[in-house]
Image 1 (tube, one colour):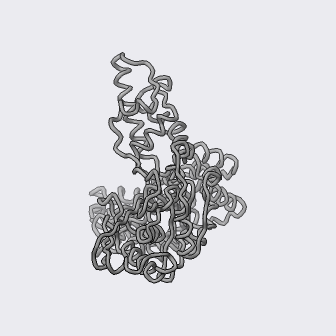
Image 2: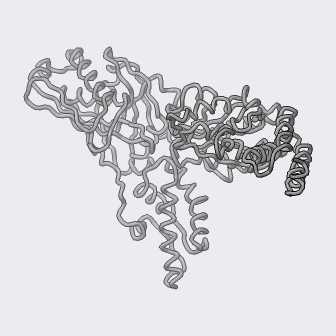
Image 3: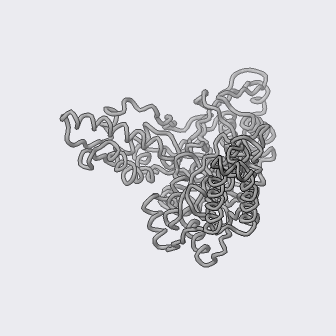
Length: 554
């Protein structure tokens, strides 16, 4: 057989390839268990014909083993001052997030055991989650890899396929390590909350080992079938909705909430980052376009409705392209964009703030709501008509809001005497409660106080203060329970000229996260029961002026 192979030219070719692999195994610095697996496959290659199908399978496998960065890593540069500078250069605001990242880097600098928490940046779209990961990698002098997990349903995407399958390959994590050539990159697992599962397996379960610092030093890919140490790899995940992440996987990560941007922050981001970037992409110079602060605010309020700044950048890019055409045709050399001229470039504003009542009215209360694009003021209306005591609710309200309105009506019925409500109002009149913007679904318990105030105002013929907003969940016994999204709700109220906010006593601690210049312009009343809340919301009204609305801008 050796003579026949020599005549066919197979022995020399296969032998040279085996010798080359033996040399590469020594140079690759493979751990002992991986080197043994590679040598075992080389022994099989020696006795095989290169025309055999199994030969090419073994050759590809050994090629993967020797090309992985088993012992090659980049040196970390953990200069906290430099890291802070780079984070501030790349992102405006997000002070709490930056502080947590710098604390994490400080621990890595003092304790180099390569084990630490897995960070998860959670927040609405467009707030800079992915770019924060890039900044961390740059500040640590590490390679950066981004893996999008949105829509991934196959477990093999994480762990790879076994070699028994035709065309088998390792999972995306091993592929990423081979691509960057080091075993300690920053790997960002983007959109981890959008993982799926079907008959091919559950990728989130496969990630349990990857994202556990106590286990990922022995990560086993189905294709390699040997353990690979991932403890040096810095994993960062991102998510829009943390509740969609499976519980066991969520417990392995440290959640860092990234809040939505306020209007003032968006103005600074637009002027410092977005406008220069869009000018460069449009081939313009900074002298070609200047957007004033009122102009930037007009774009933000009238043409975007988002928590982040992605839509804002698109609008600025649209303006830059129109100016680029004028410059290319020789019509313009410089444009100063003010608030009055924005419509000339972007057309009529698609978004307009809801009109709030300019004087106290019976049955109209102002609530506060949290949405994925920030806080909103919720106008709640109620009216009555002759009937038999039925309650009708409209405005695309979810089941929880419908229950809150029924709870509010039951509480008012039980405490009618103390609230000066005639007892016959409940038996002889039907009540219709409506929340405008009927095409927009609304859900959640935080409108409980506002619903109760609207109904109490209607039944007692007492106007509701129009300078006041309220939020809080209520119970059948009149307790006021805490709610979420306080920061966004307060910012929305300040932006619209509200001067007083009624909120649950248990949410007083959440004022810590509200900027001081916003808190200084507002008066807060903290309530623990619904009776106290109703006394606050239906006091002698204070009429808001146009000047007060303009002076309070978030």
